[in-house]
Length: 132
Picture 1: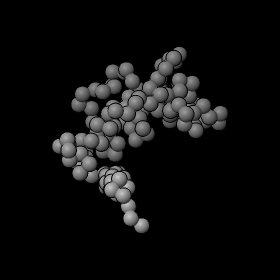
Picture 2: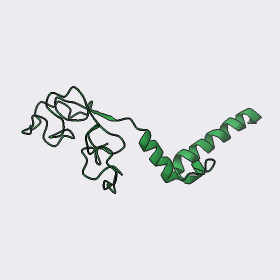
Picture 3: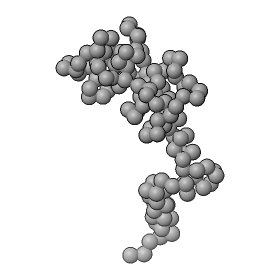
Picture 4: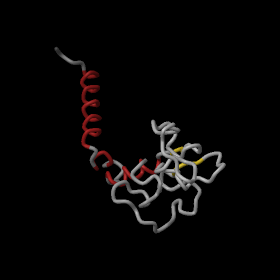
């Protein structure tokens, strides 16, 4: 079977795209001169903040959100949830900052010089550390 030049171009483009997706290397950023590490960091920074449920403290939409049999903390939220002892009573909304993992808008949010987690890159010990 003979392929037209257009078909060969499509096949070639798909192969290149697959190579870029599979290798996840600095080659993908060769045109702009950035490294793969910087590219991943830029993607991470572009992530949206993660909404928390103010009724239970869990990440909204997670299967553990507002789970009836979950243990409650003295603060009224689910024990061990990202918002446990962090979300103020009566709060209408709460979110984890995608840049640092802290509760958005708190004094600890995006604090300069904060220690970073080696696993996820967010602030070490933040409510979102290794969770988002």
